[in-house]
Image (tube, rainbow, N blue to C red; front, side, top):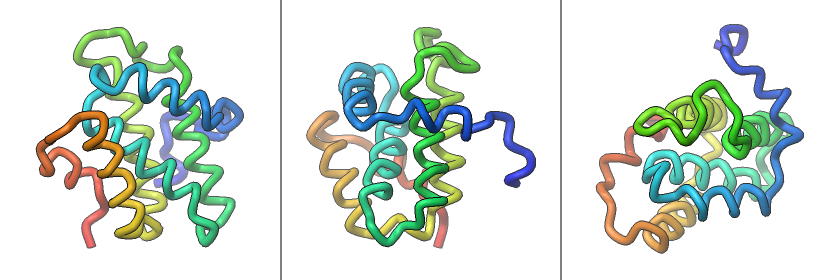
Length: 132
């Protein structure tokens, strides 16, 4: 799968910045939706885990950097499609680091999701997680 990437996430790694990530998430949360926000939160919290190897964190930074940038394959302002490429990038990173997504990381991401969205359909986010 690694050799078949459409997006070169290494090119976006330098775009990752924690404060820019939080700014973007807060600004677009409602428009991007529960799935995109949850995916970004999961990945962010994985990067905070000291047991996750730096090589995996670099992949996450690339996917989050892609999410942060407004200019990507499908521009964010395009209604109903703008975040599909971002979700694909984030889902790829989740797939890549899936065995590092602990129950604590899920709890943190879900807690933040409830803070921003209130009640949400659990089924929306379950599909993002690698099946055990």
